[in-house]
Length: 118
Image 1: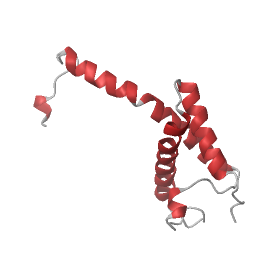
Image 2 (image 1 turned 180 degrees about the horizontal axis):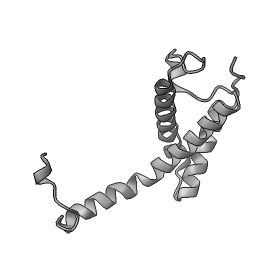
Image 3 (image 1 turned 120 degrees about the vertical axis):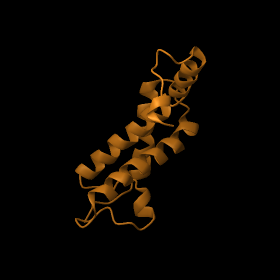
Image 4 (image 1 turned 180 degrees about the vertical axis):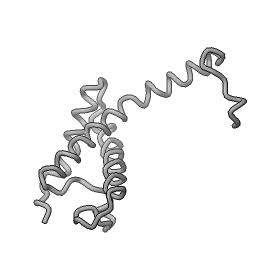
């Protein structure tokens, strides 16, 4: 799609706008559940604990000082999305607050029996 074929929002038809808004409203709860999981991941790392981590399960270094920041950040994002994907069918949150708490709770349960980072 070239720049010349892009239309401003005011020119888009109402069906396109409705489709975009429907998509965004269905992605609202997964986004907030992932945000809750992300907050707990950051909190665990700051406290020196080993967070629930997809990359750690795949034997990719994210805990030592030699770990690259981009690798750690990618792990944060992917682990949070995975945590949200696990919690949404189990907890079935209906509000944004419930989705955030579900993301925090599920990740907290998965990380509850972790040890301190060496």
